[in-house]
Image (cartoon, rainbow, N blue to C red; front, side):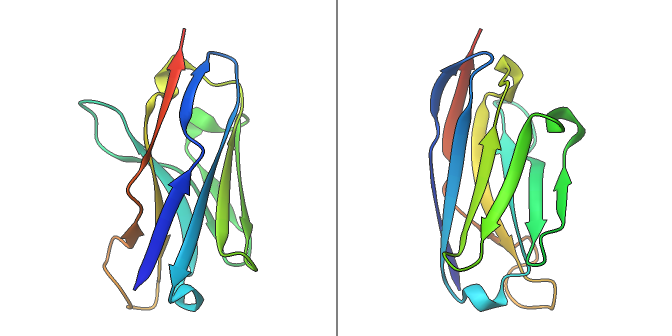
Length: 120
């Protein structure tokens, strides 16, 4: 099993910045990729950004150029730096860890989420 704990959410004005952190514990050696998803009220959960063990990244079009994702493998922690925040970025942000070799749940492991609210 893998446990994920997010931190760093909060309330920020439009144009501001926040950094989310996600610390993983447990069978972290089985993690192939970590990522951040978000879910706004009334909307489906969507991928925001992901990063592989090797450092390859993927971003949603809506956040490209504004968000960056990084990973400290020694600390089993992934970060999401969010700049130039917009009200439409308001959502609960969830950390996710996946294994692509058939181990663990198909959708991966999830944190409990952290609220990000961007005021206009």
